[in-house]
Structure formats: C-alpha cells, structure tokens
Image 1: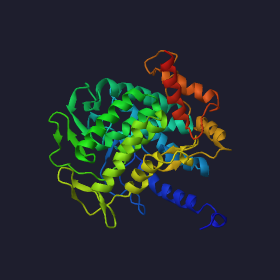
Image 2: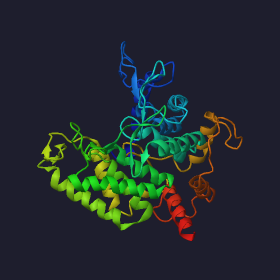
Image 3: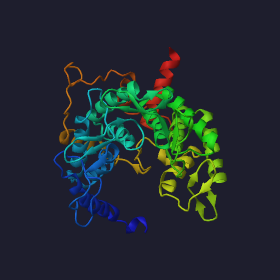
Image 4: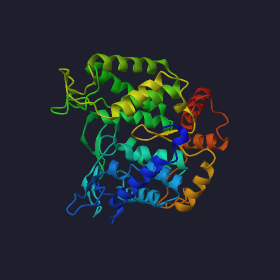
Length: 396
C-alpha cells in the first residue's frame, strides 16, 4: 500500500482492538484482567491473577492512541491501573509480583526487576519522557530508590520481600538484563555499566544468555536452562552505546551477533536453544527476535538511523512511538488536564512526598528547559541527559 492509499486504516484497527480490550479494566481495583475475549469480553470464571508488569504496561500505547483519536477512555484506563498498582506498594515502596485484580491482595509478594515486574518500571519512566507525566516520574524515582536499597546486590538484582526487604531468592534472569538500558534513560550509567558487564560475562560463559542462573550456586537453573532469542541484553547494549559512545559496547554487539550466527542459525531462520549447556535447539523462533533482538542489534551498527532521533520512544516490545511534532505540546497540555497530579507537592514535606532532588532529574529538567537545543545529531533527550551527567562528573 502506497502513502497515497493510506488513510488511517491502521489507526482504525488499533482503536477497534483497544475497545475490545477495555472490558478487562472494569474491575473494583481498576487493575486489568490478564485475559479478555476479544469477542465476548471477560469470560465468567476468568482468572483474577495478574502480574505487576501486565497490569502496568500499556500507558504508552493507550496514551498515544488517545492522543491520536481524541478518545481518552484508553489513557484513563491505563493511567488508573498505574495508580492502582502504586497504592498497593508496601511501606518500603516495593511492589509484589502477582496480584488479585478483584481484591487488590498480593498473591506473590516478591519484588524485583525481572519476570512479572520489569516493564512496569520501564513504563513509569517512559510515560514521563513521552507525556511529561510528573506523577509517573515521582513513582519511578521512589520505586527506583527502593529497588536499589533492597533488591540491588551489586552488580546483580535479587527478588526481595516487599514486606521487609529480605532476600527471597537470588537469580540472574535473562529478562533482568533490560534494566541497564532503563538505567541509561534515568542517567545512572555507572550502575548500568556494572550490571550489563555482569550479564555479558554470563553470555560469554554460555555463548548466549540463559533464562535463569543461580547466583548462590553459580550454576544454571535446574529446568529454565533455555535461551529464547530474547532481546533484553541487546537492548541495554544499544542504549549504553548510544549514551556513552564507548567502543566496548560495539564489541559486545559484535560478539552477540557472532554468537547468534554460530549457536542459533538454522536453514530457515534462527532457533531458540533448549539447553544452553548442550546447545540443543528448539523448533521455534519467537516474534520478538525480529521485532526487538535484531532491531536493537542493527541499530547499534547504524549510527545515522532515524530511530535515534529525539522524537522517538521505544515501547517494551521495541515498537517506535512518538507524538506528532506539531501537536506534541498540545497533547501534553491535554494530558495534564486529564491527569492532574494525585501525588502531593514534593516541596511540602508531608507523608506522601516523593523526593525529586535527584541530580538526574535536575539534568532532565535542564535539558527540557533548553528545548533540546544542545542535542547532537541523532541524540535522544534521554541520551542528552546522560551526556550532561557524564560531562558534569568529569568537571568535578
């Protein structure tokens, strides 16, 4: 279909799909069901279990759709879900892994940055980047500090009790390897670098990144020994390279590409590995390998690609999202009217206050204040923040 034949057909399809998903959000807690029948809605007897990532990872897509269509039901539903989750945090500002969407009671109370939790934190920060949502930034900063205090065992992240912060189990999960990339957007390059290097040491050890590796036993998980061609480690490599221009990450990307070619290439595509210790392959190639793994890997080696531009924001599935340039300011103004802050003024010092004095936040605000006039070619606002942070550290 040529550009002259396109008249918003995909937007119409996206709107129809979103309308079919909305019934999942009709719960007493505002937390969405994990499953919804696209024809009949939520079926009787549907499971009420939902993980934190599943409940909190559609504010970008629903937000952009509302901005483009003027139908704000989608953004309202997603925004309500984010705030509903945040209200369920513990006194340590930690969130569990699995919750009952009807009662709001936690089913699994372990907190971390891996499976079941990961993209919730990603979307808090990216909602701020895309829509200038100050509440999402406040929630992210508080959650980030809590995770550093209780789940970060340098350079790894563990699963901690949301109640008391005690370690429940210590594993390196392949899904956790997205975290350094998110830390780049936050400006925390030092910790991002250490964790990324730790994960790449596992990649070098096994030739790919296993799904789970016991940190206590320093051994593969007894059953989850596979590699599904996941993109998270490549994603972090891309963000770290773009932010630092450190050639180390370029070499990492080269190693990853060589490993994929050697360990996973088949006659008709690339195969998941059933057991990384033996190299046994599985007869499947997940869609995220094309949508994310190869995309991020390609972008590392293409410095002039449009995707590096300031307007773009990656979804958790590696899809490129942006607000129309001529409407972005108006959309963000509408966003503030639709979603006035529910969190207390950070300067009041009351019980609901979230500290916003972080130096990275100050740099983010400085970057926004100059309207990105200091952006270098193909540099995103978040990468500008990282560069300013590095330059500030060098001066001192």
